[in-house]
Amino acid sequence: MTPTQPLPLDDKEIELLRFTTAGSVDDGKSTLIGRLLFDSKSIFEDQMEALQRSSDLTGKGDINLANLTDGLRAEREQGITIDVAYRYFATPRREFIIADTPGHIQYTRNMVTGASTANLAVILVDARQGVIEQTRRHAYIASLLRIPHVVVCVNKMDLVDYDEAAFQRVYNDFNMFSTHLQVRDLTCIPISALKGDNVVEKSDKMPWYQGPALLHYLETLHIANDRNLHDPRFPVQWVNRPQDDAFHDFRGLSGQIAGGRFKVGDEVAVLPSGKRSRIKSIYTYDGELKEAFTPMSVTILLEDDIDVSRGDMLVRPDNVPYVDQQLDVMMCWMHEEPMRVGRKYAFKSAARSGRCMIKDLRFQVDIDTFQRKPDATTLELNEIGRVTLMTTAPLAYDAYSRNRSTGSMIIIDEATNLTVGAAMVCEPIKEVPVLEEA
Image 1 (cartoon, rainbow, N blue to C red):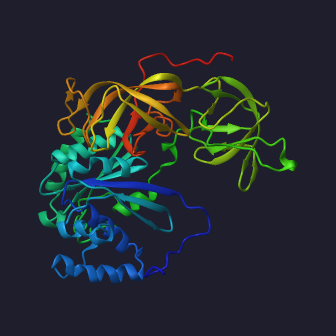
Image 2 (image 1 turned 180 degrees about the vertical axis):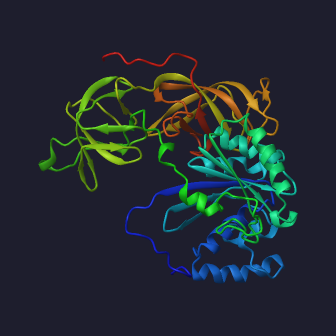
Image 3 (image 1 turned 180 degrees about the horizontal axis):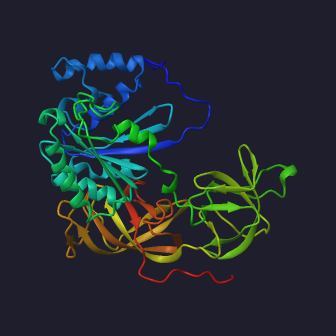
């Protein structure tokens, strides 16, 4: 299969941007993504044929760009997004992974799943409706997940005659509301996903808007500093011991660097044991390196033969995460069976797996009003609250606000092996830890 028009991609490595869409029902999320794919010539010929055939399903006769992402029949029949749909496309400047997430409150868990790895959130607002309850809820979740960049697309400008005042009302309302959130970078763009205004090309129908079209913004957004380059973190995913006599002295620690950088000769500590050594060498698939940084996948050899296992973490002795068995998290419950205080679950955090107990539910958050409910006794499906966990063994972790890789967890039902919760670790109310010599 070939795209309707080949993309002139260079041979050099192109940066990847992950972004998610969110918004109220019928705000045009799926149509916007369809427009991005259609106008950027990223649709395969067979996809175009299927799109034309599916246009009869809605009874309107016109090509429905939303069907590029709404793949389930129920989604097309109801005109809503139910599941998370991922789409991939590229321009000469950048590659993209899009997560089209549902807008319904009953699919909050789907939005959390799609947004958990995003660099950017695109929140759509209907220019006629303005900032409504669901808009605030999606913005809150984007803030909770610490998505670094938020773009508010004021959609359906064609239905308000491209009126600047309508756009300005939405901008002012959202900007005022965002002061209560932890949004680092906020941009607002007036668009018409249906007509294509300010999506891929700048529109001449809104001369009062001096900013970029959405695609240009996505292509030029600086995301290199979104990664934590200050705190060296290397969760060990695999201890590499080749079964070959020629490599009998080889004991490599393999994994993906979750933060900072590591250099040959650096002193490192192994957590949770606290044992120390120095980096002897660093390898990748392409050969040996003197230095590696996040998010590279590497194999590290230490000078000393100390005990290191899967799930341990290499850090710098002068820059260590928290190591504790009790931690507070913001939990999004993702299963029909409610969370039960006192029940034991399994968890996975970075490369570490273990068991934990729900010790306490401090409060539940009403994600429509953001009010805390300290009297809540459980979390139901799609509900969010602050929970205290107790792990069976010490866990090395950072606050989620500092490192999304080492500060996130999934909670697993041991009986069914299903993921029942997604957790973002809160900053502990204690002093920054200091690692003593082991």
